[in-house]
Amino acid sequence: MDKEIVGERFERALDFIYGDKNNKKISEKYEITQQSVGQLKKKKAINETISFICENEMINLNWIQTGKGEMFVSENNEIQKNDDNYHIELLNVRAGAGEGIYNYVIETVDTISLDKSFFRTPINTNKVKGIQVDGDSMEPTLRDGDYVLIDENTTFGVNGIYAIQLGGQILIKRLQFKMDGTILIISDNTKYEIETFNPKENQLPFQVLGLKVLSIQK
Image (cartoon, rainbow, N blue to C red; front, top):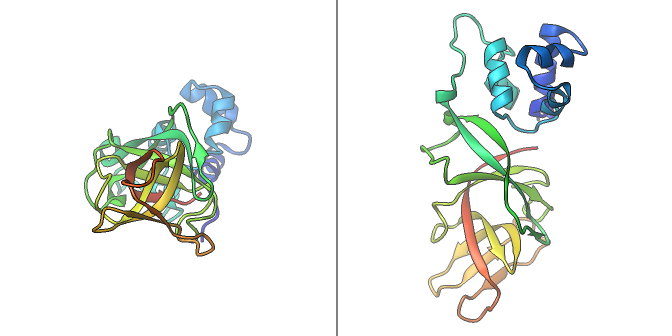
């Protein structure tokens, strides 16, 4: 498995073009601070700035994202256009795959750009958000630090992995909807017990935030 993150591949491509210690050159060319260039090289997901620089430098965005294919786009291939990508907001949410995380003010902290081919069906980017996994209860399916894209349009009825809010905590869990109206809250890691939520009996605030449509390994 490729252990490099997006930022590391981005840095490697820039080193190939400009040589080592290229933050100043990139900063001047794209009118961003050297600190911002350094931060881009630590990103775990593609954002609009990385996408823009890659397109201008003929760097293959698919290689940046997956590590597969050629580092650079050949003259015989078209550069990936923004129209071929979904731009998805990342929220300042670490959803607990374990004990749960409390989040009181949810804000957009970044944007990632993903090729539309990663998705089985078209999505509404206004309703799809990215959040980060915290904990080990969903291993091996999801690991600590992975990103999960959730679709806020799907909040009930379809068995699958969801982001939920339970008693003020945001969690990533597998939900199974039963005919009697109860919901099984399941951790893929077998060391965690299955819990049952009964809306008629349980007084804890419960909300399904959205269904997982894609996960991105850290």
